[in-house]
Image 1 (tube, rainbow, N blue to C red):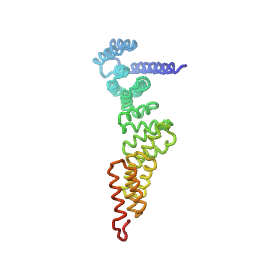
Image 2 (tube, rainbow, N blue to C red):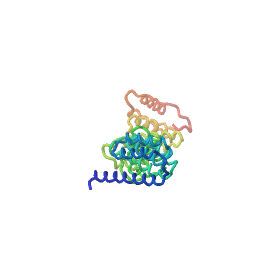
Image 3 (spheres, one colour):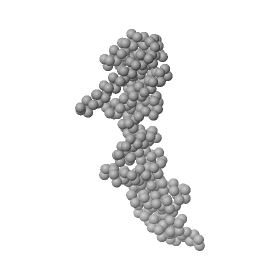
Length: 315
């Protein structure tokens, strides 16, 4: 069986299952809606004329809007044409009448999401369908959908929404350093450089050569941010280590000079004057031409070399 045949087989299987569940639902639901409109809607749906089917289902709903079988048919037709909001609303009403519809609703909306990711490459539709499914059936299995959703939200800059899906994708056992890199980026963008560094360290030697410079940049950037945090908390030795990590990777280049300068100030506080002078010299050398750090570093070197130093002072 070819891959295309396999997909068609799964799709036909879903359609058959859906029709079976609708028939069972109809058998368990009291009659009362417009039977002729319902029949015409089913016939239009079978022909693939979803617009006509929706018109007939809406006609049936005018007479009996509380009929779960009609609401379910209308919801499925809306889902078929990608109108997720209307599908969710109709499924929600159907579930209020018959809670057993929840499983059918979630399966239908996840089908929409998978079609959107596999064939349409429509992340917006997939995200809407998944979130609707989760609303109607919390905890539904998202296997195969977590990664594309994570990448969609990250691509939109919505890292808070992306992160749970990255975590789900990795929890599914996907072993891809690029996936971990993207999750580390999400942590970094959300201000959690500690976790970002942990994940970056995991994949530092495994990412393709073309992405290693990105890893180094993020390691250096997050190390600098962690150094600043340690400095604010007066953990001077920790701050030195973080700033040294930025210096070691040499990225981001704009922050290497700052890392040397901050290290110099810490070394002054620790009374390590000769090392501090060397750090300020390195800051001068690494600073961009015309940058303010060149003059500041020169002033600090002059202070240490020629300024007075009383007993008990660090330098």
